[in-house]
Length: 177
Ligand SMILES: [Zn+2]
Image 1 (tube, rainbow, N blue to C red):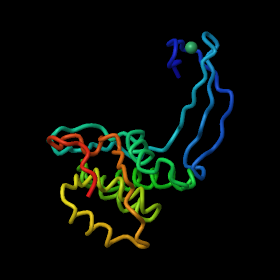
Image 2 (cartoon, rainbow, N blue to C red):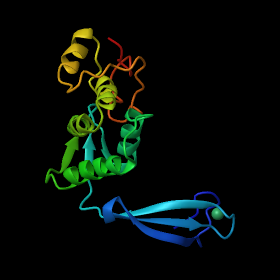
Image 3 (cartoon, rainbow, N blue to C red):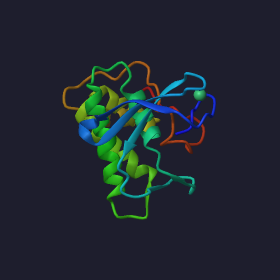
């Protein structure tokens, strides 16, 4: 594994341990050339997944981008990181085992929303507000009607890093009712 800081090719594994319930191996590495430290994950990949975006563009599915979108939606929410890992892994496996040659960004968005809904209502609304690109208050009301405990909509709605919704014309962040 090449050092991400200096490009050195002799990085050493300092520590190796299972994470995500044994579904991944986490390795702490150090570079002897620049002393840079970084972490790598080894995971099972059942197959390559291609994402078909709304623009018609095809890109390889990127687990890290999925993770970032979910992390943004869950920012400052008290949710066990292990549960978040399981959500990301679960969505990734569903996509890998779907049997379709490619999946649409809509499909991924729906999976994320379904997962967040079970995890944290506020994160769900944050994600859905960006993903669905709400423009009208009524959409929000409809959505809130589906929540279990009537959690308030957060005042500011930060977007997932728009990975799942990059082609929306104009406003990238639809948001407030
Ligand atoms: Zn280095």
